[in-house]
Length: 93
Image 1 (cartoon, helix red, strand yellow):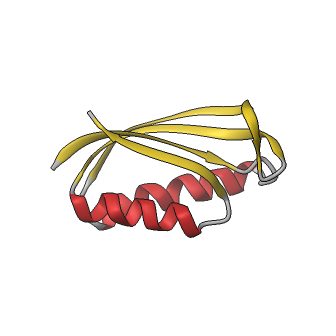
Image 2 (cartoon, rainbow, N blue to C red; image 1 turned 180 degrees about the vertical axis):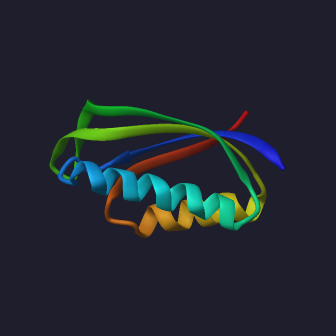
């Protein structure tokens, strides 16, 4: 297992409950693969540097995780197909 720091931006049109659900789904994705989410830091609604899918704001979430390669690949796959996540990144510490 390696340590990773990641961030994803959730589209701003969701409700507060919608944000919590997306965050819980991402955390469950890692835990289902036997990994440990060590920190979740919700930055909240912020302006984007440039428009993404006609959105000027987004709900930012930063997290750290101890993950294996399978979990990292699954995170990328899910974030690419999930409509609620408009951008994501995961980098090895």
